[in-house]
Image (cartoon, rainbow, N blue to C red):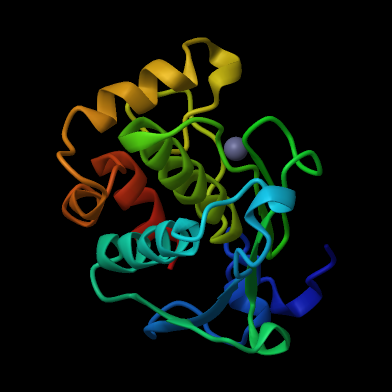
Length: 183
Ligand SMILES: [Zn+2]
């Protein structure tokens, strides 16, 4: 993307484009595709909650620098989160502000954990975060090794029920620092 003179926040192009930058609380509007056809879309009705919790977790991790707001109007959103079975990579893919999450198969808390962590990772990209080589970071790239299901299982052990996800944001101190440094 060419940013020209607007490249004041080079790591956070989306926020720069949205006209918000360092020194201000960055407002960001996002939209989550409703799971209207679960069988066809491979999502579950509750998956949009997981995407919302991921965005709220980034807001909480930003120490007040990032304000996210969910909108029902897709056209007004800077970040758009789609359920994209078969269209994205194995778990997800992000192109600019378009986030594609491939909902995991299966049932129960491990699936919830995997979909949530995928949302968190992919929306992290939408906020400008790149991959790291630290296994404990949500922005870790599994190309460095390891197994995403084991990573999710480790996280899922903290959860009794899906609502507990809101108490366990899932990112590391390093993820938080990198987010704050770019806002
Ligand atoms: Zn990634």
